[in-house]
Amino acid sequence: NNSRLEKAYVALQALKKAITDDPKNLTKNWCGPDVCSYYGVYCATAPDDPCARTVASVDLNHGDLAGTLPEELGLLSDLAVFHLNSNRFCGALPDALRSLHLLHEIDVSNNQLTGNFPSQLLCLPNVQYVDIRFNNFCGEVPAAIFEKKIDALFINNNNFEFTLPANFSSSTASVIVLANLPRVGGCLPSSIGDMAGTLNELILLNSGISSCIPPEIGKLDKLTVLDLSSNGIVGKLPDTIGNMRALEQLNVANNMLAGEIPESICALPNLKNFTYSHNFFCGEPHRCLEVPHIDDRQNCIAGRPDQRPGEQCIEFLHRPPAQCAAHGQSSPPPMYAPPPPMY
Figure (cartoon, rainbow, N blue to C red):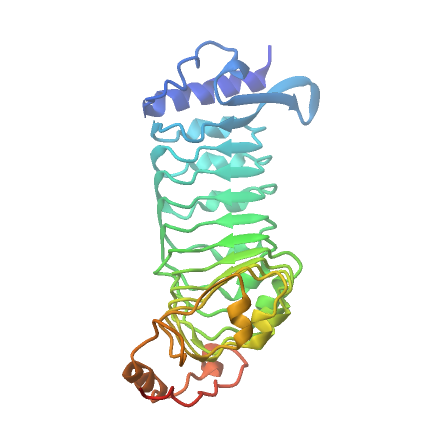
């Protein structure tokens, strides 16, 4: 007689009942009290009782399951891993998930989930991996998520509307993906350098950011991937990026950046892919052409193929220079280089 497995039976039967379509018959053997034999359910010794078995993991990734997620899932009190990615679940995440105090990983990405940001995740003391991307969540993302000691945060491809909070740089995550959230906005804080000890990948493409790139970004010496493409970023590329010795991929395409590409960036020892197309750069050191893969199209770089028309470049150069200090950064306004030669 194991009350943990009895509760798990109630929870899993409620989930089975809430599934409206199971084209791969994944829950076909979800019958009877032996929940540890159910497909996708993994049991282990209970963390607080070496004599008891308990459900430690539910993994139904890529199941193509349709339905909703019942509140009874909160009965899986020892659950450490909850993986439901690439299904067709809709509705909100159950509020009862807030009671899963041992939950370490939650991945409900690539579903049709709706409602506000699941703030019940903020109540989970041990959660390290949060992946809710490719859903229809909306509204604000609570700033408190950036204070949580989590390792990976994927909230991209939802319908969130919020401004990048001042405490964004408090996050201890190694991977942060806020991409394809065009109704997000705000500035990259100069405190971004505070993330140096932990941050490995930062992907903010198409997330409504309009600011300069603060020079303090150069402190992120463990960062391997930085993607700031398709935003409203202005000013120059700070040469401090040349201090980011671990950087392998850098993408700043589709912004309003200008000036020269700093040679220090192209001299980075591990840089394999540098994309800066669709900006207004007017010069690139020869060193940049030695990076294994660069994309410099649609800029204002004399002598390079597939650049912007000269009149576009001249029109841009006659605009008032970007005042980076007005964007909350301490960097000076960028110096604009002379216009490219007319052909």
